Image (cartoon, rainbow, N blue to C red; front, side, top):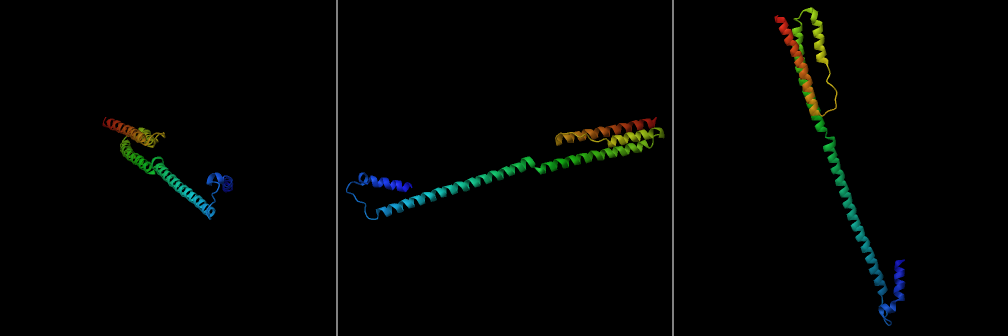
Length: 173
């Protein structure tokens, strides 16, 4: 459509453009159409080439951003290794203090067996209560929870050691 409009304008103004006596050489029209087609094809290929390059660049960039976001999410947000390490440390600390508590509870029970029968039941019940009292369930960081475990069990162990000292001092009298 644009070609026809251009051609019509050229025909209408041919005298002004080429002069009144100037005739177009033979094959001029065919050569002009071929050049015009070549220019159009070249533009389409150039646009398609640039478009393809831009599209592939966009896809590469988006892929790189997606991979980076996934890695960052895995490393910083999910990081299962840190959770496993910290929970493993919590279990180790709790097991260690529980072992110390059991040792002190056994020592205390051995001493209670030497006490007269009237107070024995009460003392055994107290040792069982101290030993079975559960750790409070609170929402704190793992480091703070380790400190809580150490403090909680240390208080229990200290209480059992105080009970042992009382039994030892009353036995000697």
